Image (cartoon, rainbow, N blue to C red; front, top):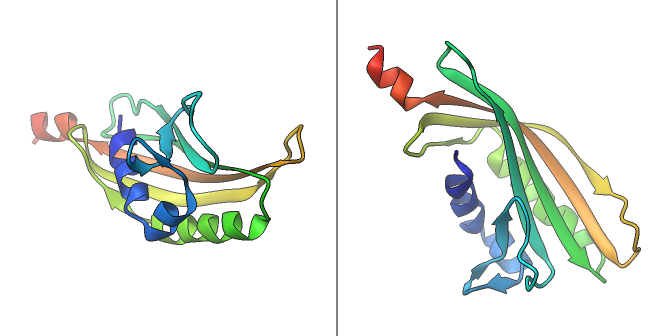
Length: 138
């Protein structure tokens, strides 16, 4: 899909690079789940898209989860705010989609069963135009 393009974009933000732990010499931003040996803080990105059928536009939701352990909420909220401001209406592309756009939807802290964990969730609506459909129909 387009998780790689999105993760590369997020890793380029200095606020994220300064917030998350390094993982294999790169900021700890993962698709779908974190590896067992990942160290807090880190970010997980999940994308759920619905096929647009006969239209050129696929749409769905983007979920960005920030996880921390034993720290204040201030850093997490500052990074979440930066992500919200930078990704809202941002346009990306990759080999499948020519126009991937994000529209912020909601954000809030998430209660965790263990109070030492801090979890913040950001949600975006996303729309993407399929290149293959575009190229074969024009």
